[in-house]
Image (cartoon, rainbow, N blue to C red; front, side):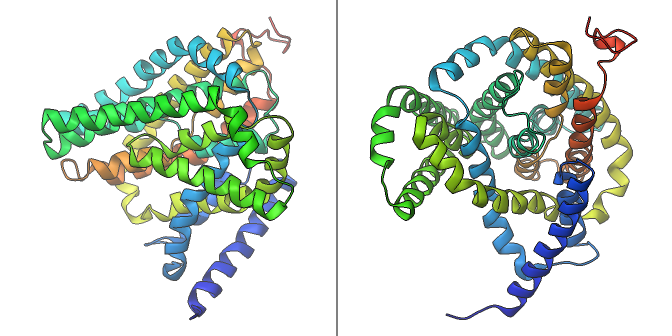
Length: 391
């Protein structure tokens, strides 16, 4: 087997540098996610130290990282709890679409895009980054918080909505026929329905199949099933993230605990690669002209996304401070926004650098804002009192 010396050297240097960055962030009690994203920006094409040999590995590892992040999040809930939470948060999802997609559509028209470009920008501003949000919840120790089910319900409903949105946007961009669009849409919705059914009704048989006393066999079975389901969901034009999340949801009891122990080290490694990859896809030279407009839109949609999370957590009876945490953790945009921009590049090429600027602003600012929100007093506008006590 031929060994790529540049790959080893570049990847080794990147991991050592990110280790140092992570140590600095954690010393101050911060999530290292913003530093990983900025590192990707510096190491990509147009950055100060490109790593072309490591690019292919990072791209593949990023997809695995997102899948593992969502797998472990799914382990925190039972299918019954999550089904109830999804039903409860359908109104929250509608509000999410209205408050976050409409500003993007309006901005697209103001920027001179045609209706297809405006619809694409609506999707970019609507969808939060499942990967970044999942990592933030873990890094900030919020897995057991009361607002976390609200956040996860919104993320999954967004991903399910993408199963409808992406085929329709793709059809609009390439001028697909009504029959082909309908077939693609039906396939995506069927895949989501089957995955939801399996996680709720088949978790007993799934647990029995996966349970084994051999640690190596156990890890292979868990990873194999997760990647198969995630790949099938993506092939059906649904979301690999939803597929992985539902696999985690189907595991319970001692099996879920064994999965956490076995998969967490892999999750930590590949999630780091995931955040690095987002930055690598963006050429910093294209960002500067787009920054003013992108920053204005980012400010508006950070507020609207916070409002949605605040409302959703309120439906679960969460206190004011928890509602604020739920809202701010949803601010980051990432992988889906980049995909949407690439999909619409043929009809709106200027959307790609604009979306890149928008994503990097919120992907970096979002984790900082939610960290501050976790330790700050509830502001007066959100119902707090001036002495910091909950109203």
